[in-house]
Length: 257
Image 1 (cartoon, rainbow, N blue to C red):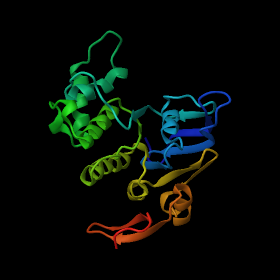
Image 2: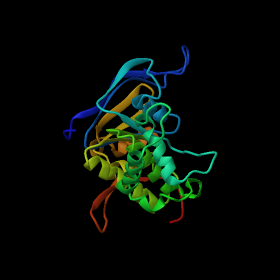
Image 3: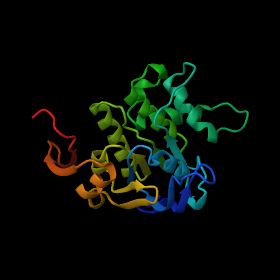
């Protein structure tokens, strides 16, 4: 795909779960482009997961439309299995749309699954029991499962939630690399720092009727973040060993000096 072309476009979409119930969001228009990370931020219960499911085709908007170029892969926030499967088998399940009805996965499907694990740096996990993996390892495996479907856009629901700092860095590095390869990456996050680190553009779900989309560094201001989260937030540029990074600092009130 040419870098920069829109791979997913939502046009004035609105969603609620039943007639007469409150709208989760209304009249949202947003595009995700090849080579770009789009971060979706907002407080709990603001509709971020519902928004992702509408964008990925798991839910149909009540009004408006979503158009895609190529296919979309979805990575949920959490995933569990009842039976024990190897990591390679979990990734191989992502080939389902490529396997003909009543047919078994082929050697080519298995090779594609192995290559997807290499792509996310998790090839060493191939024969491990999926249920024994850490949270960060599972996220990488689920990303590989989405990639093996040969998707052009990957949609992830809080891919770095509940991970330690090392695993957060690992997952974010993989997502940035996928975008640099030309994919479109859409992710929700509770961490504005993650958006500032890897996302060219962001969507802030301020309220059901107020969603704002724009360049991340222009959109994630002290004033707007403070309004959206209901707590004072300031941003600051910090020099790290690799670069100058912009970070957000919430004021949680009086603490240890």
